[in-house]
Image 1 (tube, rainbow, N blue to C red):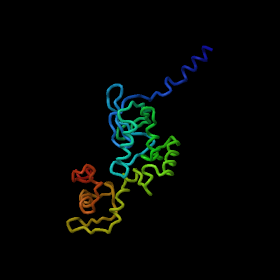
Image 2: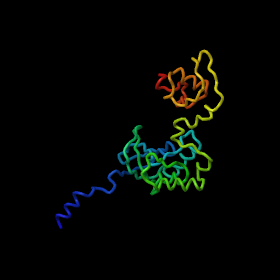
Image 3: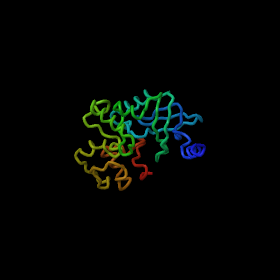
Image 4: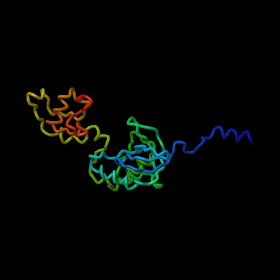
Length: 216
C-alpha cells in the first residue's frame, strides 16, 4: 500500500490547475483584452484565448468592449494562463465573478470563436447559437471577422471605387487594390495610397506618416 501511495505521489501533478492565478480586473482594452492586477500588485494584460472580438474601429467594436467591461471590470478574476503571444500579452481563459468571460462574449454575439486556435469546441457551439438567434454582431447580414478586417477587409469600399490615376508627381502609382503596408513597394507608394486613395488604415497612429516600418 505504501508503495502504491508513493507511486501515485510521484506521478500525479502537484496541482489540478498549476497555471491558474487570481487578481482583479482594472482595465478593459477591447472586447477580448483586459488588464488584471495580480497578487504581487503587478498589472498583466490578458488576451482572451479561444475568441476574437471586433476591432475598436469595426462595427460592434465598442459594444463588445462594453460587454466585456460589464462582465469583468472591477471584479475578481481567475486566470487560466495559456502563456504569451507575440505581443507579450498573456493568453488566458478567464472567469470574472465566476462567469467564463471568453464563452460569455461569444454567447452574447460580441466575439467570434477563433477557430484557427480553437481547442474548446463548446465555444464554436456558442457561436453557432448566437448566429442563429442573430445576437449582437450577428444582427448584421455579413459581419466582417476581425482577422479579415486586420488584413484589409474594411478597405473593400476603397479599392472597389473607380481607379484614380496618379499625377506626374505621384510616381505613376494608382489605386489598384493594395490594402496593407506589406504590399507597398516604397514609402512614396504608401504616401500615395494614404493621401490620394484615402487608405487611412496605413496610418494607424494618425500622425500623417503611413507604414512607419518603411517611412521612418
